[in-house]
Amino acid sequence: MEQTQLFQEKVVDDELPLKLELIKQIGWLVRLRWIAIVGVFFTVMVANLARNMITHPLPLYIIAGMMVLYNFEPRMYRKAPEQQKLGSIKRQACIHIILDLLSLTALIHFSGGVENPFIFYFIFHLIIASIILSKRVSYILAGLNTLLLSSLITLEYFLVIPHYDLNNFLPVDLWRNPTYTFGVLFVFTSTLFFSVYLATTITQTAREREAETRELKENLEEKVDELVETRKEVDFERNKLKSIIECMQEGVIFADSTNQTTLFNKAAQQIQKEQSDLNLQSDLQFGSAELLAQISEVLPEGSDTIETKNQQIGEKYYENTYAAVRDTDDNSLGTVLVARDVTDRKRMEQQLIFSEKMAAIGEVAAGIAHEINNPLDGLLNCILRIKRNPNNVAQTQEYLDLMEEAIRRIENTIGKLLDFSRPHELTLTAINLNDVVNETIGLIEYGAIEKGIKIEKNYQKHISLIHGDKHLLEQVILNLSLNAITAMPDGGILKYETDEIILDSLLGQPSVCVKVIDTGIGISKAVQDRIFDPFYTTQITEKGTGLGLSVSDRIVRQHQGLIDVESEEGQGSTFTVKLPIA
Image (tube, rainbow, N blue to C red; front, side, top):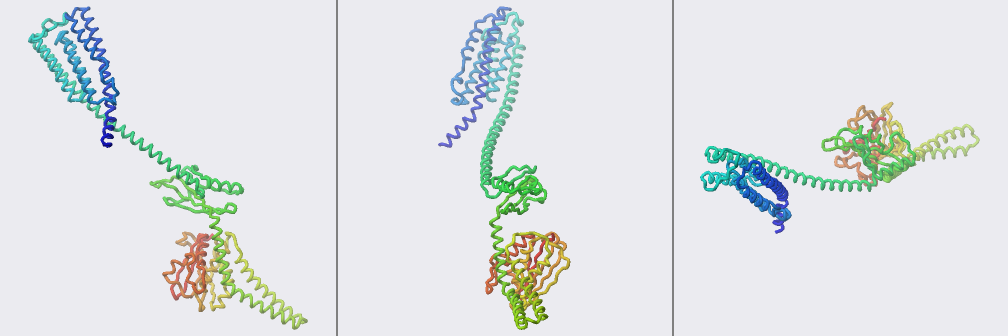
């Protein structure tokens, strides 16, 4: 029921423009009829006064008066267009045109019949009918018009009805000439139907174009409404996204393809303010247009291009991620910067590294204790001998030299241990990888020898420097060394090799490497993929933490390097640390 009502309302709405147009055209016909009525009165008066052409003017005045009566406001103007039916309006228009045809026929009859040149005014009404009414009705009215005029001429010709001459205008009894009479009828009829054909064809084409235009207008209005709704949805999503970005703890900055910053959320503004408050001077300030432009230039082509840079502002650490933003056609739209506060994570990483360092120190402490104990025994023996013979100056001097050597040996060992065990901030300097390996061997050498492990060195002389943190890299070599010692419970060979790689395929640049090689029990293929996972360990009896290799891998990645492992069960393992050349 509701669907039927909605359909009817839609049909009414669709017909409303047609109703309005039709009422407008009928109003135009009414105004033309007023002009015609005035023209009839004026023409009859002038023709009668000037040349006494019309013998009986009274019927003409009566017909014009009747036209005045039915030309007053039609009923269609008494109701709103919405309250009228389209068919009813067309019927009223058709009735008015029929009345006009009858009135014009009567006027022609009383003003000369076929001799009256205004006979061709019928064509105007038929053209108007073709514009207002349908094609079928227009041809019906053309037939009616032809019937009326032909009946009038025929009846006058055969004297069934009287003929009213136009005095002093045409030859007398011209209407009795069959050639003239039926020639005028033929010309009139052919002209009438040809005019109706042209008018209906043009009108039909115009209506089709109007219908197409109306349909296009309606479609356009629908599209506009859709676009308005889509615009509202887009604005809503944009505002929602903007609100979300403003609430994010990460700083977000977006610069378009012209390097104009169009997005700068509150977190990013706070980071920039902190940098300004600390008066940190740098060539490229955080979030500056110059920095974003530089990053945009170095980002490679592609839709998934990301580069990460770390930055320290005061006591805080930020991980800045730059990404190229591109459309579906891979055209650059700009660059986005996301700055995350990783201070807590950084401190946890440092604490984790330090904890693992302390665990490593615990493992080497026994060997260091033995290494210190031997010089202490020598010191004690020298002191006892000096006490037995204090007057022997030469012997005392000899023992004092031995005591000094032992103390310096103890001091060196303790210094290494203290230096290694202290917390260190990440400090990148140019370092020699051979020196790093030697420092680490000094911590584990005595303990390895105690377990029957022979240490061998094969260094690349004049090896290129790397840019890194000496203490962190020592911790990496120490962790690898302790794992190697644990893998050789019955003794073996622990070998260190350093080398240069002209162009490493994985790092994509020249690098140096250090290999820690053992002849221990090896690592199974099933385990090798997991040994760098946190808390994963195979040292159950040794109570390993499972963090040594994970921490080492993290440190090496901080240095833009990588760790590789090659191992076979029963054949030993080779851990290779690759680091880019400074």
